[in-house]
Length: 181
Image 1 (cartoon, rainbow, N blue to C red):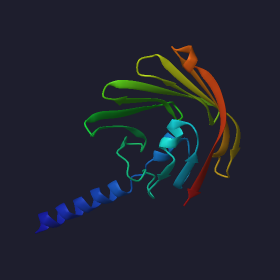
Image 2 (image 1 turned 90 degrees about the vertical axis):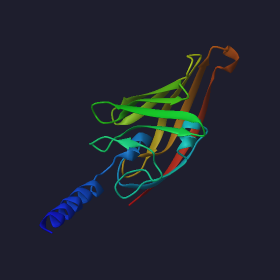
Image 3 (image 1 turned 120 degrees about the vertical axis):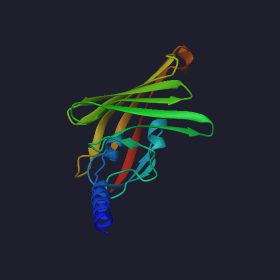
């Protein structure tokens, strides 16, 4: 009986410490603070992927397949959806900001490089799987909320393609609404 009680106590302590884990899932989306929900409006296909995200009380994105490291940072995932193998790997700079995100769908690799100026994400570069296309998003004219997160910004999207007729620059505005706890 004493061994059973000891095992139950140990299981309770281990479970409680696992529940107490805090995650920094919102960092992957360039948002900080105790975020409950984020909604984005943008022409950018990467931003539209994250058009509505919800985060649990512990900071983990709800309905997330992400793996987190011991510090609570999202570091990647691997899954098979509809017969397609998808992976994502996140690398961080010394300030715990996502610096490189590598995505793969059935072996076709895309690489996103983030460039920071001070505390803000200044630009993002996407290289295509076969190196024939590169897209750079440069961010400016940001409006920020009380938590320091951007709520509106100007985007200059420059596409360089091996086919010059598909290259060019477009400018538009992105907005996002962030709800905090």
